[in-house]
Image (tube, rainbow, N blue to C red; front, side, top):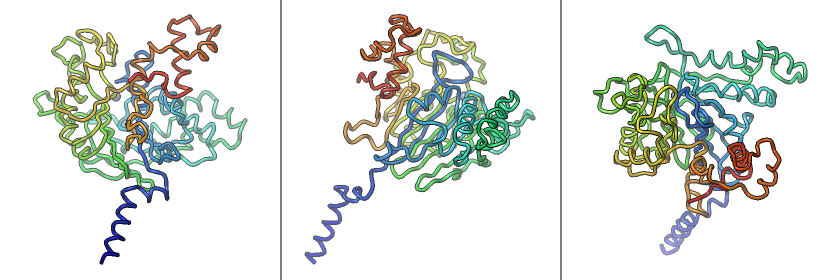
Length: 417
Ligand SMILES: [Zn+2]
């Protein structure tokens, strides 16, 4: 009996001290916002909407698997800043067929075709063709099939194939493997790899909109996209999607588009009510995250962007918003988890890094807010001297310093808190 107790203690002790983990490195998950701009508007270099989810272990910086959700403009540049190139992506997922979520994909597909035609095809996961009540069809399949058409028509594809016969004859679409599903009100698994599972659920914004959930052994993340409530009338209980709330039950992280109350139709922003109402209001999103039990809420695709006087053609009543303006709306909603007011490259790591106990590996979420006040390290300052962009602390210089600091450590020189 005593021997039995001792054996149990030994086994239990081994588990508690993590002795099993010596067999393999500790698994981890990273969620990175590759772009936080809302809608087709453009502002201050912010990339279009997208989220990179990486899963792996300590030995590969959580990067054995790399999944990209949406690819707005400039996604490829943000990916390059975290050391990810198109040839490394395992799958691409689209929430819906709006250009602010898709236009960056042409660059990704073109570059993968250029350099990785001999490699595996990239899975592109999205909704089946969806016919709008107004009669037109939203087709992810056609977007994928025609993703390289501009470059086929210009003659570039033929010219590049003449240089390298390994390049696939049909252009970028040839290296893509489309996987479509019919979004429904129940969660369905749409993609798996090993112990990682991606599920989808139908949500409202435009026809064919879907939201996703990634489950891994160390945590789960929901990517809501531009989801809003099925009821588009303001008399509804909430502007958030009931299906997304169901999908998000027990998730660790929710990444979601949001609309600040400053833009409400009664506040003189000029934004048409249907545009306002088809996004999740910030307060409703905080309340939903609380009901779902999420630990982290990452606001993204924020309308308006931080610091903007205008959001596209619409004015921001009361002047530009700061981080705190979003944060206080979420806090007032009763959300008791951690709110990340999204900036490009904001990153969460699960589990939190054991060394510094931080879920924010590079403090990237501070990056944009602090970039203008960062002095480049002397080595970079010297390298920039005489460069055409060096306007002695003018905007060009800051830009150069920004990209250099990204190169040397994902904004680590912007660490402030
Ligand atoms: Zn959008």
